[in-house]
Image (cartoon, rainbow, N blue to C red; front, side, top):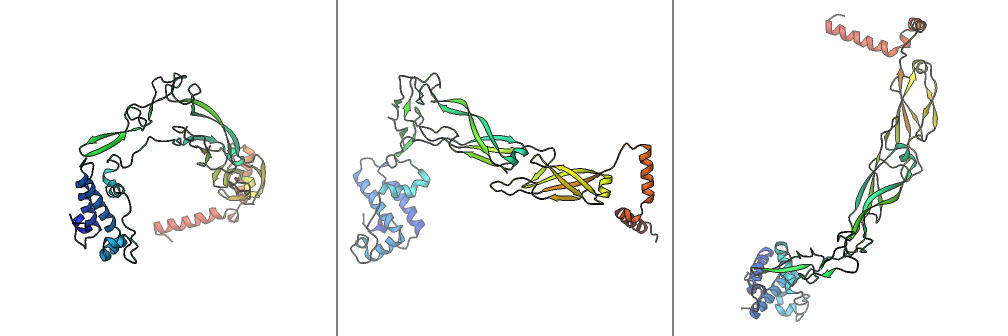
Length: 380
């Protein structure tokens, strides 16, 4: 066989990257040592075609090779810059075939049993009141979680014994099997990748090395949290596998609906009834605030239902800030009911004294209504 790189791969000198890769795949499959066990000639050809592909698949090395040949790649010609053939043949083979076969060829990347692994993160849902969201809260949570077994110290084996090296995989956690000319590598079916087996499981944890217990954890809920806020407790999640660190615990907060206030970010909204006389004459009333106090509200003369009055800095606290939002009070005018005869008489006298100026919206609406009816009926 010619030692020319193009001849080794069986391609023309103007072959593009796709043609090079396709040709290399065919040649590599033909001469792979696992397909030709004990064949020294096949092993040498496999190395040659890997050397050829390594040079021609690199644009810089290919340019040097086309101009100076192998001597240029080996540093024999000035300005080469190729540095010769670099890399293991197996690495090159895996870079091309890895997307198809993965780690199917034995001996290329021997996978040892898994080491320590971080534990899973946990979620805990916790409901608080709007007042607690305003002030913040130090809470205690009872969390069911796994702890290292105190009888076997996490080994999973009965006291006085210990896990033994798996006889099937000799402790690697992996087994290899021949399938055609491929050497397949799989997780050991006996130890399930752990590399050890337990002949006498701990009676307390049944060989798991952990037991479920309930732990009490303290969590500081900051002032200003909103519905959906999460608080992270580092290292309070599930135990890690094989001595790995614990995961984290995420406390997801939900804020209970309040009977007086509605929240929108830092703002609070409250709907408050006012008497007909207060709305008409104006006055002052006291309204509740989220901090448990009271605030004085000035009701302007002639206030109507739906009017909003803002109380600055009486809203919610803001997370990680000293600022507070505003409280927005919406008025609704309450019509008196269950009137006495005298009250009704006074209201009739009052109605008789009121003119259009006292009820501008009433008068304006019915003027528009009359115009509408005239258009519908065709009367002027």
